[in-house]
Amino acid sequence: MISLPARPGFSLIELLVALVLLSGGLAVAAGVSRHAMRAVAAGGRRSVAATLAAGNLDSLASMPCASRAAGSLSSRGVSLAWSVLDSAGASFVQQTVAFIGGSGPVTTSFETLLPC
Image 1 (cartoon, rainbow, N blue to C red):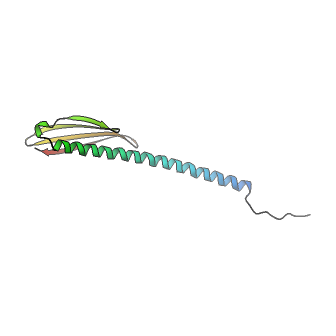
Image 2: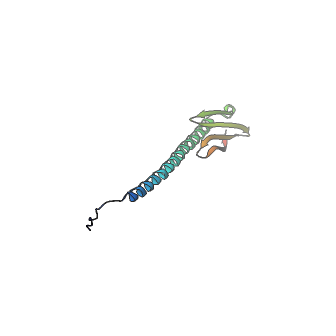
């Protein structure tokens, strides 16, 4: 009986196992990248919300007390509403910012006292 020398290489089973492991790793990577993209988008909307609130507050602070009034605005998926209550020598401003975050709707309120 003549025996053939063993040839170097991979068996079909080894290749199939490697392909299954590689496809599983790629599926996990796709899921992680989707989650990361959602987090980045939510962070962008949170940044827009903070910028809108700060800009609106600066605008209100530059007005005379008698001109400060409630209102609302919307920009790039972010809604901002504010109310103004005048008291002795100051205005109480409450701002409410709403946007869609990574896990659903987010609403944040800011309260500030602006001197006249």
